Image 1 (cartoon, rainbow, N blue to C red):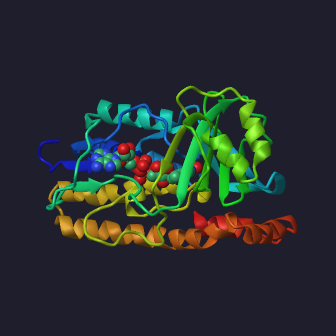
Image 2 (cartoon, rainbow, N blue to C red):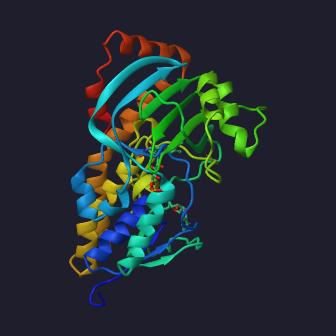
Length: 342
Ligand SMILES: Cc1cc2nc3c(=O)[nH]c(=O)nc-3n(C[C@H](O)[C@H](O)[C@H](O)COP(=O)(O)OP(=O)(O)OC[C@H]3O[C@@H](n4cnc5c(N)ncnc54)[C@H](O)[C@@H]3O)c2cc1C
């Protein structure tokens, strides 16, 4: 390892950990600075749509998905009514971030990587050899609120559901060990009083999703799993500045696609060979990062643009009705939409 240059990664989420593991397997020393610690619950729908086996094998992270649920189809609800159920072209793996991030962190360390948890770091002005995997960029003016909780024995139509409410949508996804993740994206409501444990149920009711709130209330909760996140924004384009941003740091796709984690992992896989080449003295840092940015832009730019264009259809009453009518009459091209978004 000593003959090659080390890579330093700021952010130990999916992009950072997966890249660190893959670099270690290729004989490149990597250090990860992570502001938080493991295991930890994260606000995330916890299903990965569009992730192929090749990417998992390339990164060498297959073992981290042990016990994951596999969803073959998704059922869509509009204000409690089923509007569509369609097969997923590629089955979606579903696993909690509690398990996935901790397993990846463990694998990274076992492979010789240096992990510095509880260490917030800034990227230096000369960022040669530094990767930005810090996740979504903070956005003070953001109207969005993400809420999630794990429950057991949730009465569920299928393993994967998406519920559209008033300025809200919620994913219900069975993950590992019999837990079901309920995770919603909501437009913040001024004046709505919420407290941590009850916040999700309060927002569900305020969004016209009372039945889902009742199902949630009847299900035993996983202690410590309720969490919230605010202050983030979705991206229309892939980051185009200098340096190397992977995952949400390079642009966050709206969560209804279930594709953010796939983008984080695929980005890490795309960056692997060029970074190994740089580490062995093959190319300058500027050339290396330029090449990776171009490849990420080619792969993800269209997806980000289309997802942000479609996002309002999942949130606003009249547009949701249009979507629901198209779905009920069989006019919604689900296979085409899936291809355009994944
Ligand atoms: C409500 C909601 C639902 C979602 N549902 C889904 C879904 O169902 N499927 C899906 O695929 N995606 C979903 N996503 C998106 C998904 O969570 C992200 O796309 C994914 O986590 C991106 O991985 P990442 O590695 O880029 O960032 P993250 O996983 O966020 O990791 C970034 C890491 O960087 C650390 N960090 C930040 N700043 C610093 C610093 N200065 N120093 C050190 N460490 C730092 C953070 O602590 C964090 O651990 C959802 C997102 C939201 C908000």
